[in-house]
Length: 613
Image: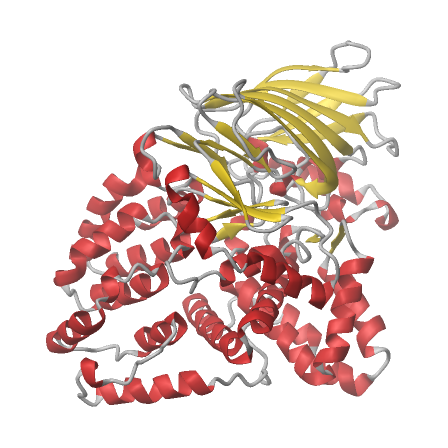
């Protein structure tokens, strides 16, 4: 029955005293919240069957000794559970798999015997596992070998590993993965840098992580170091190009450590995935997954790497306790990302990023509508898919809130607060109330006037934006504004002064173009700039919105090619939504989608199936 996990948990929680509830016990998205029995370590032993598109093997968990329950609950989604036993005594354990819920999957209840300290679960995945993206050779850059990658955030880890799938439950892991001999396996831990002849790869993650940071990739891959503790993995055909794009990664690491303290993981490597990856990046510890859409050839989009690197502090080190607190991961990370880019490229560069981000926020607020509850930072996602919280509200409103605090207390004081926040809460979880308590105790410190100026409750718990927000300025973008006015007034595009513009200025220019343009203006822009074929995915996507609005069919083939090759949801949703706003456009979108759907990840397909049905 739908939401049966949640209803059962609610009844059980009512029987517990408040002081027995931990942050994970308040998480309605995991069956583990039913009990105090928790995991502390995973030994994973699996094989990857590329032909049949399944994983199979054993997940062996060491349990936390501090428990007062004779049952333990795991999350699963479309997994086949074949056996559950105590690996020490070799005794089988009684288990029960609950009916499946559309969002949460099936709770796995295991009865513990006296003295049970570990559990071994033998299982295999479904061919439809939501976290697993299987790619044919033709969907890769090299065109010779198949590819697999996972996307576990927010609650998809349960579709490839039986686990306690809540962000507040952290564990270490070792893993052994067997793959085809011509392929290489990587995980979110310590990795090999070369293929071996056995097809067997071992991994370890000695720092406790939540399940949503479990990650696996299998493909024809190669590695190139960028510094002593940074490097890049990619398909061999793209490796040099990717390494050249990411050459500033060591500088980013140094800037990040100078801001908020020592990097507390082993390495920081980046894996560039095939185009179907639905996000810009995923901050898997020690192995960020990145979209190839950031490979522009001029390093203009690598602020995304600064974002994923920043997650090594905000998110991976200090983690949101529940998905309702998601802004604590992403708002902090966007703020941190722009501080890294300011340290490397200067304040004007960071200011442009902030204003472009503010534009994204304004579009998100407009799409939700005034007063919508999902424009709050703290969300109520308890009976919803937590992916619904992956919006620019968490990212950009969260970052704007931190800029607001900085503007009031001063950067030096705020940096000291944040550095202490990361160091004091390392490898722990944080919820919104906990952050507010720290803010009150360590920064506001009883100053009622300061508390009123910060107005944290309004930022976090109220919809839309407060009346007072920090001012955002950029001299370079002011020049772009004048250029937009000149073009709108009839000036020929080739006469516009765009010399030495960065991609950010061009993006701001495209976004600022008149909503209504005639064919001559569109043709003029195309002849001078050819944004549709710029090689910069941000510029292309922004231009295609004008193409769709004006039905400028000269660039429809480029639009179709873009939608066929790019799987990043940030680009797909606005473009397909714009196409679907007219009868003719929706038919065109459906025709493209039929051909492109297999190239997209589950999290993109979920949204697009609904939009284009």
